[in-house]
Length: 222
Image 1 (cartoon, rainbow, N blue to C red):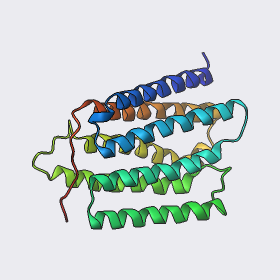
Image 2: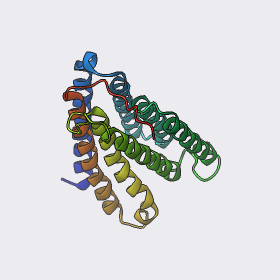
Image 3: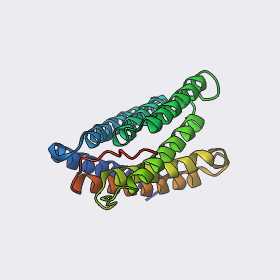
């Protein structure tokens, strides 16, 4: 079996696992808090995007532009999610200012250094930094609560899952120019190894849906 065939098999396994996580979320819909319901909707949105991208790739239709739009909606969804879990004025102000900065970079990039037919390396890196930075801030605030239990707290689990994949993607983006000099087989192997982080991410998401959801919202103010 060639590396390309292995990659296709791993892709199917990963997407099937993501679908299982989405189905679990649907089955527990009534037990989910509003933030988790938003997150469940985003999971299915992600799956639909991946399916459309795969179909377009099979017909040799350019689909890179979809990743640009996906990154924009991803950060928007995560920003809303974070704010629902931490409705603090200072947190919200800095969060939405950061999103506005990302949006400015995103728009400028489409007309200059990062058009739709290139990978969104720069704006994507900004997005990953925002996700990890504000996710860490949210978790720090949550950890100050007396009743905080990271094993059953959906905030901790979801944000940790987001951070796992954001960190791996950020690393790929920062190494992108170096990777362009590598043999194609090596590049495929690197991207294939990234599937491990996706599986880890969705395993954490699965636990977030399976553990007893709690109606939590950080009210701690700095």
